[in-house]
Image (tube, rainbow, N blue to C red; front, side, top):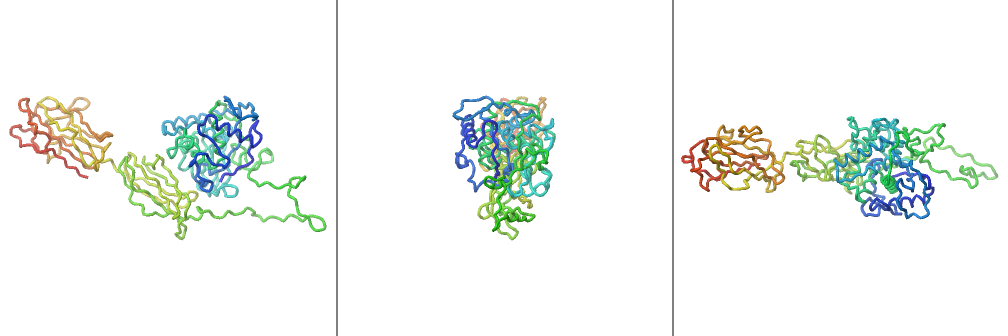
Length: 608
């Protein structure tokens, strides 16, 4: 649902026909692939669902609330050749000005997203376009030095009458309305969306939708979710329509984005050109949306049905006459004349029920093979199809859904079931929670516990078979390198340790024989904090020998229980071991090689 009012165009664009030409001219210029159709859908298939499949208001950033519909001047700050023949243009450079603090917030958000999500290619001009149509750049830049609006900017109550129906979700914490939700702040987030999409953009430790730095950064992350690349026309359209599901909204935002791409400049805070109307709120830009008093007659009241006028009359509805003359008095309407909207599918959902979700466990870095399933049900247990279920990852974890997002929304199928996308484990181990919620309802959430275990290997093997030998007091010519696998696949980034042990049956650290060197060059016989590389390989530092001769053992272990024992031989140069001597689990620590027992084959005893 997107309510629209009489479109007001700025100087030089006075008719709807001119507006259409303006949109076409701007869309065809520098934004690749940006086109519109008369049918009200993007030209690229799949960019947005059909009208009856549009996401509900509660699943967009703004709740599909009202926005400023004025288009930019047809003459851009740095005009390019135009093919729009006969379209009047005027020079209005003030429209290209953006209040300094607001402009800084847009650019700061772009810079942060360039690092956090480089594949998104978010342009700050898109944030500026959304900020323009949502709040007129915070009411012309009426913000404090830290970016907080001087007075709250609130949209109309989303009460289902002329607007979407979104009951209160924040107990009035953000919008001062404990009955219905309202869009809040310079980027007009509804509270239920801000709850998961909010960001701290100015580093003050708070996520405030009334702060332009916080709101701009949140908008950037919101537009960059689902792996969208905003340099691609299809993804750009999808992202904008997810903010407000209206083709007219898409056209308006694209027009302003293109306008700002052609040039803009910074102006002092509070001196920006604020739109003359606050759509749907009945207040002035940058105010709380209260109805205007007698001193502000220029601010119209929005979203009231027009009254048919009497031909040649005063504009009031005609009254049927009584037989024989006179008029009948108008009946007095009942105190409550607004229709009560019928309950929607979402309204009848009482709770969510788990649908056989298995235990959720995955190794760090792996995808969870199990998926979460939840069914929307009425109080009597009847399933509810075609409602939105939001899945939110909470807790101290870097796990995410496919695409790298912490939040995803799924529509229930004909059996009322919503299946969340696959979870992808991060590097943080431990348990976290995925909460399922019905979008647009305040019913209790359904929690699922997921666990990430550390990366593991179940087998280790040397990458070479050269015997590891050394003379007393010398250094081993070859470094020990091993490969770790898990169920036959490469085991990358697996924690490992290496220790020179006393014997095959005594894994305590040896006090003589071969050794490694620490950073200061001192002998050490245990290495911890090791990890295999991306190919599952682990190459140990050089080994050195003291004056003790004999056969020694180096044991390498990994998370998951994989173990490999490697045999090391220290002997005088004239007593080199035969080629058959290599790795062994049979100890001969400190013994003369001529009297040591015959070494066995390399020991490898994986355990999981």
